[in-house]
Length: 189
Image (tube, rainbow, N blue to C red; front, side):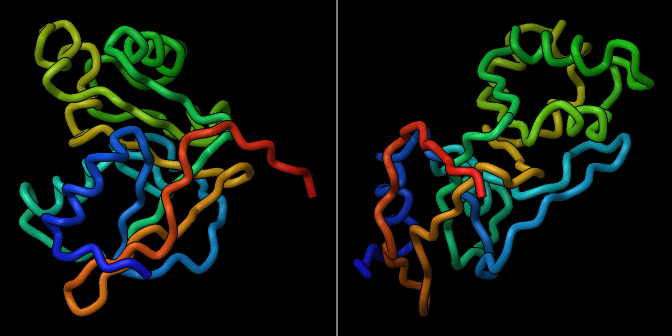
């Protein structure tokens, strides 16, 4: 294990991994199980991850909490819906909402319908972009509840979770190296 230091030292190190998915937890991950989605709610159920240092930064600076002791890299080659622009979000809304009981101007999404098609969702759009056009706010209100670029996975067929950082006695240590983004070939069992 390599000693990193306090939260600020970890955030500096994390800047190298701006496009890496990280899951932050107060407990170690023992086993991943597929998660069923509820019909219409604000957020999907599943293993949540932030992109880069987003969750760590949000928890410490916005929520003023520091409940994490484990940071895992999330590598997913599954059928995850990836949204990287407001235009892609509008297409997603049209795809999911069209023909279902949710209206565009509502705060909730029918995640059960989303889960029939996708194994997870990743939204790499900042709220700054969201505010640039008031049409997006009125049509995509559910995104208002999405605090940072992040996502959730509910089916774990082609997912690797790897412990990268661990905190002991308020000191962070690097347990494993971050795996650079590559497309892995998962073997079927």
